[in-house]
Length: 192
Image 1 (cartoon, rainbow, N blue to C red):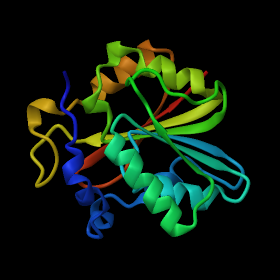
Image 2: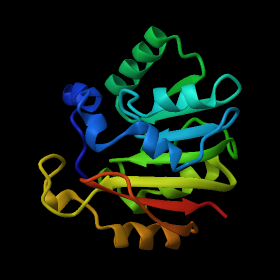
Image 3: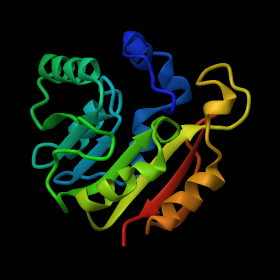
């Protein structure tokens, strides 16, 4: 099984200094989110990106925050309620390749620090494709496969070329790399 982030350390994902090296507004801007859009945030954790995205697409838009961890989804729900964010839907995924989200319901998908945690053969890329509308964009952000002061061990990281190969094999069109921060790479795709 691939490396999974320990939910007991989830507050690290919300640390204020994280914005210095992984700014949610900058990253969400790469998806060109607008009012009325619906975002699928896969592996959303406690909502570092999901809450910002929900504000960007409000009032008519929606964010599905999907995670396989009950603790993460519970924390996301708490944070959304405390912030008065009503257009964020916390979703507990029983499996990494099956999400209780309607088909063709999302305009974009975000996968931050998730790709290295899942097995692409699991079918999760097909499940994301099922949920996305035709033409929807997918932004994959993950740890650079080089030494960084933060992040998972090097053997658990995945090279950008491998992500591109797996995504294109799964039917996504690669639109190119995107600059996202000093420790991460960003890759933008389109669902046909």
